[in-house]
Image (cartoon, rainbow, N blue to C red):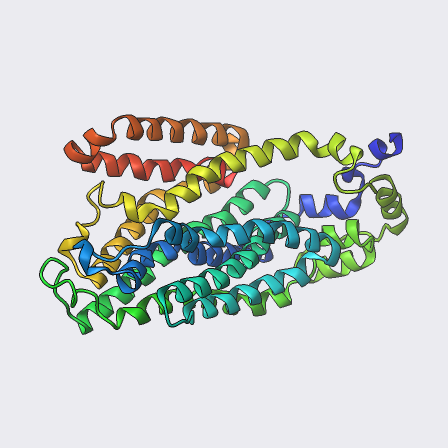
Length: 427
């Protein structure tokens, strides 16, 4: 134990060189490559919000109700939430594999899995509504499984490449690509809906319930889902060209010489081969995952990080995945009976695009520019506090805001997204 304390990370030249390296072009390249993972993750997870109402109109219309078709609650929950179940499993499995096999090997697998499942989601098949939704949920579970691996690996790889001075800003910039992915989810769905509705005109549901849902709309939701494969495939080549991170090669594999060679290819730094010293470090820090030594060293940090992520995600994902139901209340979309199916997709996507552009996206980048000045702790506390205030106001004054001041409702709603990202989601 005493030897472990003496043999700290700072004593290793390989880590010191990475921590003190000046910011270089490869750091920017790593941000883009890792960030494209977050972009794809966000697009795949949240594009479902733009088309779930369309699925209801296409597959669950019942003339006896006198209202547009709507996904039953259990089906809606499954379609929108099953990817998150896959994400949970994927994080555990790929996180473990990332430590066992290396970040680079697993990093490529997650992208291929995401690309395949995005395409298969759009090809969901069946003779009944139930069978189509079942196959869609099946493929979206495995899509989430791949996302679950990509999400933590992207942040880990960026943190292991980054220098100490700008590590927070670099990781926040990677997370900011999540905001870009949400923007594109809204923009792509909005653009496709605009193209489709110009080509396939239809009356509103109030005017003609049967003709208000264009049959061609069945292609729209499939295209939206399948396009999630494109950024994954475009990024795959660049990920295969990335060397394994120097920290993993040196500390986990115990190969200081290879770490020096790999990092020397992409960063202008000199790393000494200190194999004997590295072997001593590995010996002093060799303990099992979830062992007593693990919890002694990392238990408090792990518990704190897990609990804050858990509390944030309850609000963050529930808000993002149920936006379609909030938009009518804040005046961003019209009543379902007054529009046709493609109009509804367009309006929902436009509202999602605007909230992401004006609320979600700025929050990420304010964090990027201020995180090294204000610190992680202050930004996280501020974000949690402001989110709580705005949500409390919206909850207590819901009826008043909905009927008397929808614009204020929309502003408060957007600010919760801003402070989620200028806050706990980026820190």
